[in-house]
Figure 1: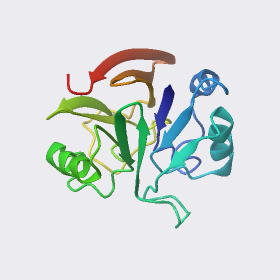
Figure 2 (figure 1 turned 90 degrees about the vertical axis):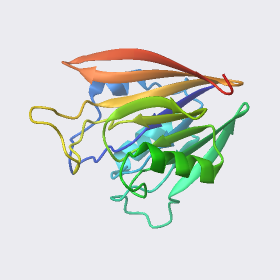
Figure 3 (figure 1 turned 45 degrees about the vertical axis):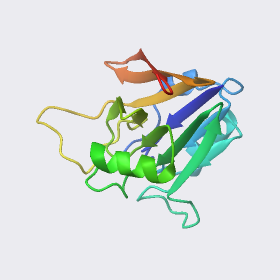
Amino acid sequence: MLVLAIGDLHIPDRALELPPKFRKLLAPGKISQILCLGNLTDRETYDFLRSVSPDLQIVKGEFDLSLSLPLSKVVTHGSLRIGFTHGHTIVPPGDSDALLIAARQMDVDVFIWGGTHRFEAYELEGKFFINPGSATGAMSSGWWAEGENPVPSFVLMDVQGTVLVLYVYQYIDGEVKVEKVSYRKGG
C-alpha cells in the first residue's frame, strides 16, 4: 500500500504552488492514502490532493482555517500503527525526546510530524520518526543557517506488513531527487 505524507504547503501565503514536477509525479490512482500534516491553506491544492487519493486524512496546522480538524490522528496499515500531527504542539519543536513522548502517548510504531519544513527520518527506541518537510519549500518561522533555504520535499511510504519503505522526494536545483530508507517493526 502506498501512503503519501505531505504538509506545510502554505499556498498562496508563502509559496505559489507545488513544484510542477511534484504535481506530475502525484498521479491519481497510484496512492492509496494521503496523510496531510496541515497548513493546507487553499481549496485548489485540497482538490488536487483529493484527486490523487480520495482517502485524504488531514490534521490541523497552525495556519489552517478549519477549526474542526483534529490535532493528531492514527491510521493502521498491516501491523504498523502510524500517528501523525502537524508538529506545532511538539515542544520544543522537532525535539527527539518530545517526539518520542508523543509517539508513546499515541501508541504508534511510526510517528510523522511537520512544522519544521525540514525532511528528517530516523529510528529511536524501536519507533520510526518521519518529517516529510514542506512540499513547496515554504519558508518557516524557525531558524535557518545563513544561505540555507527550505528544500521542497514529501515522502511516499510503501507499507507491507511490518516493513515500511520510505521514498523521499526532494526538489533540488530544478530536479527531483529520490532517496530510500527502510524500517522494520521489531527489527
